[in-house]
Figure 1 (cartoon, rainbow, N blue to C red):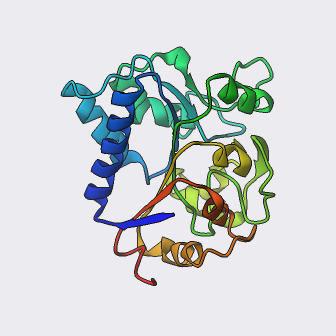
Figure 2: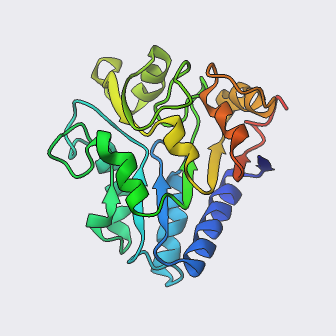
Length: 239
């Protein structure tokens, strides 16, 4: 794992540059995308680059990490909606090439078939991750087996609390989600993880100890051959 400590704006540009470089080499690359506050700055930079004619997404395929269970795709807190608002509708991604896991058995992105679909597209070339304050990545909570593929999860109280800021009240936050598993994530060829803010400092400290334990799901990344951690000074304050 390579650790890079930068300001948030520098992080967003650096990851945009990585993606831009990838697409110049491979214009039909497969991107693994995340939601939450961490990647929004990256998406803003990608939109800017697209509008300036520096990036073409027309041959790109995307797979998102996760989605809530129990809210509709057009709900303003669904991850379908999030991705459309923060990236998809602003660039020339082909909608049929964007994928978000679903619990709908009739969906082409039904979660039990999700990993095979990723494999059919040649695997994920570049995966963006954030990290929860308890060390979760995607919705893989502490205690999740490292062998999990895309699955349905029950969210921990700490994660529901973290995500309640996006809803009118904590009672509105879904308690279940579908998520790529830890093995699914590890199958990506290159991974970047964004860790910012003092509330993530303990998680980064534990990650950098390189002790691999299911108590810290993100620690599985220590076993991946190509991971870059982008952190700001606040997140790195305990190092």
